[in-house]
Image (cartoon, rainbow, N blue to C red; front, top):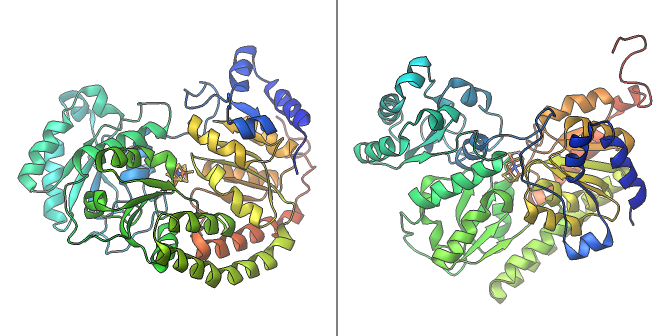
Length: 485
Ligand code: CFN
């Protein structure tokens, strides 16, 4: 199997031809066509994790998004203050489908938007006093909240507020952790630095601060699963069925206590390497806890991952693992038998944050679908090194692509399905191209584990084979006849 390497090189060049020379030269460095050589050597020269080019539409987010939205936000029993003007909190409110058990406003605050709502006076005279007041109000209004995190928006760093001092004072006064997080949106080139800053804040203010009443040989942590649409739940049950004990879930449906005791586990299982690799490497160095990357998208990768996890334990766990696989395999085979004939050979393009553009490849391939192009918003070199070997030769791999590049690729590659986010979705619908949101799973999920694959397969089928697409003639111009452009 493989795609035409030369044809795809030419296709990318043709698309970039529309740019002015300087932009063309720059953007060219963010594309690479997969070859046998790039697959094996992993010596990809693809440029990544650099500033987006001004003047083009980038799908990236900011540091605040990476910290408040991604890493800290899902920790359910803490109140996370969007510290600064109201917009950042308001527009990121409820946009990530990180599910959590509990009672809203009592012991679960994930669906709330709490902001210091900065006004001009706060910018001019500073917001530290206001932050103190808010912390006290939170304690009074939500007595069961276990802690507070202060998620800095851009102005905090610009006006020189000392949130560290306020947090220290308030932690003492309120007798609970108050964590300052310097995730001002302007830091770094994308949300990726926000992940790193958030990880560092967990390390510095939370990690190792509590003890487990009892520990055992099968204690593991799930790291980097945010429970989107219930993903972490669908993962956890498989580990538990295998006989492992999940001590902490970071951070989907997670608690402050889980962050504090995670250093007591025997093994860290990391799903999203991009957003939490900092934590597992730190725990390895500081506490000697080894880690293992795994992938629970699609049955092939899930079987492989379950076996790799079991191999880290004794014969009992390994036998249990085979029993778990033997139990679910007939179900998975039935799903594949049902949907594969309807999806075989369908061409897919993906553009997602920093992990799923590679992690979901196996799930599509289990259904006979073919990934012709994939890319990330904010991945680093280590993500691309993990991506090239999983992609077929001739496929296109891209970094921080612009809206224009993606739309051209979608049309020129004649894809059957686009997987990306809400900013992209409706443009593709208008182009007559089936689309799935691969951040939020649209309104669906989970997609992890065996429970997740059943839903994934059904969702892909109902999207690609929806009769509504027959009402479009893709060859028709998107602009109606006679429209002025
Ligand atoms: S849930 Fe994760 S899996 S955490 Fe990360 S890199 Fe985002 S929010 Mo959107 S879907 Fe996406 Fe990944 Fe890890 Fe999600 S691919 S962009 S910052 N992401």
